[in-house]
Length: 85
Image 1 (tube, rainbow, N blue to C red):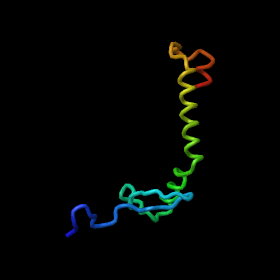
Image 2 (image 1 turned 60 degrees about the vertical axis):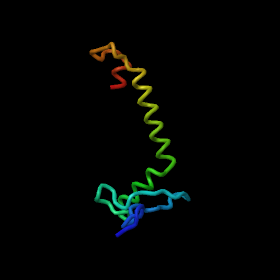
Image 3 (image 1 turned 30 degrees about the vertical axis):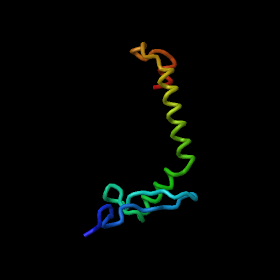
Image 4 (image 1 turned 30 degrees about the horizontal axis):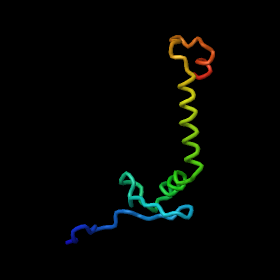
């Protein structure tokens, strides 16, 4: 029997990625073990600083597209709406 506050099994894994330590669960979606190639590849991608910059750029571009779009033009006859479509 485990003591109060103690975990009977190891729930998390510490990974060292780009000289920083990150903690993830041992299994993802009860499918991918912490040593699975696909999971390690995805973690390396999302921990990359360029991925963060890419996501911020996509959010900015989407915000600009929503600001430029003319919602009063229901038939999309305006040039800028045609380009955005």
